Amino acid sequence: GAVVSQHPSWVICKSGTSVKIECRSLDFQATTMFWYRQFPKQSLMLMATSNEGSKATYEQGVEKDKFLINHASLTLSTLTVTSAHPEDSSFYICSARDFGGQETQYFGPGTRLLVL
Amino acid sequence: AQSVTQLDSHVSVSEGTPVLLRCNYSSSYSPSLFWYVQHPNKGLQLLLKYTSAATLVKGINGFEAEFKKSETSFHLTKPSAHMSDAAEYFCVVRGSSNTGKLLFGQGTTLQVKP
Image 1 (cartoon, chains in turn red, purple):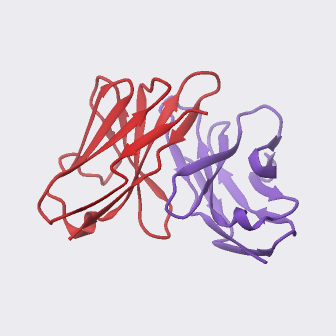
Image 2 (spheres, helix red, strand yellow; image 1 turned 90 degrees about the horizontal axis):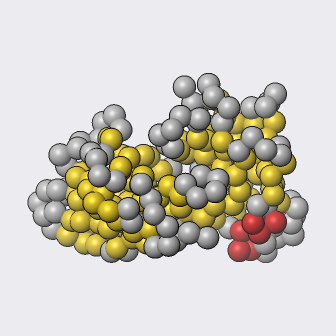
């Protein structure tokens, strides 16, 4: 099946710094990628939809200036958490939408962010 | 509007016994439904999906689910649990809109006892 990678797999940073997370579709092109956030023992919450070549669409309550999304190519989307604070600590997961055959979303392994 | 409800937050079974994870949905559209599994500190893996074809869907690792429109349910079953099945399971609904957005259920933790 299709593979989606994320980098880094985990990151620890100081409060006030910015962190960039990459999401790559390794063997297919993805015009649309999605970013989710998962708190411990909770479900995934969609943060935003990342569209190649255009602005991301954010879900209600998600600060677009804090969570910057760039989808510069058909295989790469990035999420930058700007001026991170401890409450931003979470598990961030991306998915990529594969239009080949029946549409399916493939998920990355996730990035665990800890803000000190 | 769409919603998805997993009726059990935690299910515990003995190895070799059947597994039943319950999911109910509501959707204004004819939905696509999925079950994903998440092992600790791992990404999500697609178990199976329903997209308006056969109502009984067979997935990987011996799992299957039946779409019942009259009951708005999409319960996940497996005849015989294995220790490696212990994980978090998510029922997911996607509407027919072109956004492709997925709505996740709250998750069910499956514990498998030896």
